[in-house]
Amino acid sequence: MTFPEIQTLAAQGDPEAQARLGEAYLNGNYEQKVDFSQALLWSKKAADQGNSRAKLNLGVMSLNGYQGEFDYRQAKALFEEANNAGEHKAPRYLGIIYERGLGVAQDYVLAAKFYQQGDKYGDVTAQYRLAKLYEQGLGVARDYAKAIALYQKHQHRIDHISAPSFIALGDIYGLGLGVKVNKVEAEKWYRLAIEAGSKEGEIKLNLLNEG
Image 1 (tube, rainbow, N blue to C red):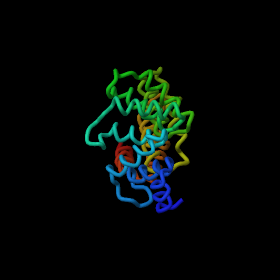
Image 2 (image 1 turned 180 degrees about the vertical axis):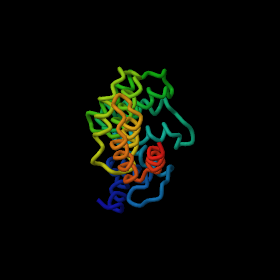
Image 3 (image 1 turned 180 degrees about the horizontal axis):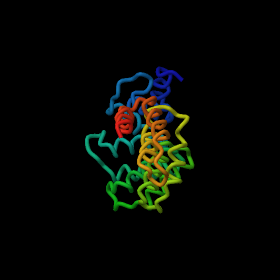
Image 4 (image 1 turned 90 degrees about the vertical axis):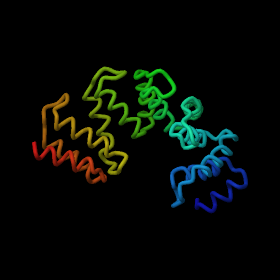
């Protein structure tokens, strides 16, 4: 569907088109300029009709203060509604709220629970955050093998979203975290991070080679 078609359907009151239009203004999709006021306008129209995608995006705006102020309580409520409706990205945001204690008591166990739900959906960010919890032993027993397995799920996706997982794997093998130090393996992952556009990957690789 083209952007003009989405605009037309949104103006006619179609909630899914309104949600997609709001998302386009929120994220700059369809080569549109990011416009939080328009993102809020169209997302609210869709959410008022019960659209869960729009509720998720409104939650993101509340979580990040895109509406002018941070509203963690509202963000949590919106993410819960979106999660109950099956939005695959909702668990990641609920996990972040509990992991960081945003408007709630910090709870790594609950954070892990939501990240595990996101993992089942195949959400890369949820998998990365869950791997970090396993690596650090927060909310779950420390388990480097599980962390490595989660990070490695992203090895066929070479982009900025997967790059942090490659950095983490490089660190694990470079420092010998739960495994034997393996600089060859560490270099492999740092190079993948570089291929994904990570400047940090370049820095880490240089430090590895200097060591």
